[in-house]
Length: 497
Image (cartoon, rainbow, N blue to C red; front, side, top):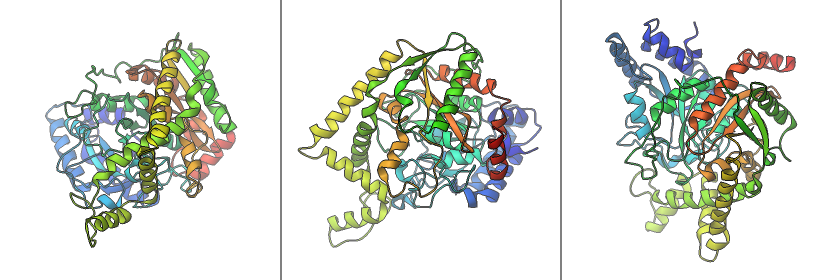
């Protein structure tokens, strides 16, 4: 039995029946990391000692009949989420040796639920990127093709789940940073409603857009993780005081009467025809199961990318001003305080972080604020209104997650605009504060493709139900036989499909 291939649900059941121990499961995952992570590089820090101690504790509690939602299950955490017992580097030289004095709220909830945290995963520096190439510690590689990116910025978390180096993981999503890696790596990823999950302890990139969310190998595992990490937190002023359901227990395969809107703007120029074919096929399968599919329009989508790449860098410019070499993190000397600031930031920040800080500072500067930042915020309002009108007619929206499959490592590094265009179908969701789920839906060019489902605020249960129904409809599909780190076998499966 390959313990690393267990879903979260299967692992919980086997642990509960005492068929396996948490120590055995955790050791299997740690061996898997040792065997494959030199090639994948999903992790920045592996917390072997504390993970095994947590697993031993989980086994004692299991033997006493204690029940907790994730008791004994190995989980990974993106390295921009604070952990008191491991470094939180944000994949930056600026925070190489930074060890927080506290846990993020979501990490505390994982521990309370009995999860075994096995390590901190790689990301684009300070979560700024779409490929996990902008990491001070080197890029993460896609487990389905090691020459390709896993998506970003939460590429390490998605790759860890795909490669069996964790049964589930947490990431953060500011403009698609959970959904894009989920699509590229063939796993399930959820970006919750803004405020549904506490951001306390998440190192801020763009505070009005950032949201923590889960990755898992299947929808049920994603639902179980969401039930643990969601909920109101008085430590986060933007946290929503909404009830949290048992998302996994309420999953259903019934989509009869579900109204699914297909945005015209998500199927235009720039979308790879092979990706479009796979996504449209997935939508037809939901329609064949009883869902009603309707065309909708989101006319201001064309402004979304430009608005996002003004708002997010502007907020990043403010948030990253705290890294001055005085309070914590990297500190470089200089003849005076200004030279010390310049030296610290020049050495500590990578090229993409510097680029976004400069864009944001320019957009906020005197004489340009109205022309750029204020106009971007107005566009944001129009984008939100587009969604509001669409959800008066439909229950969910369905479309592609990205215009292409995972691209080659290095392919877009010299062309920032091309890299930014990868986010064209995802940034609108963050701009409007909505939830969105990505589920694997097939292969294009022998690589995974993700179906993106978008719902109104608070509709995580509806999204998970639709994703679960699709997952069950395609449970026997041949493309599901594809496995990471099996490139030759996957190519044969892709040819047959």
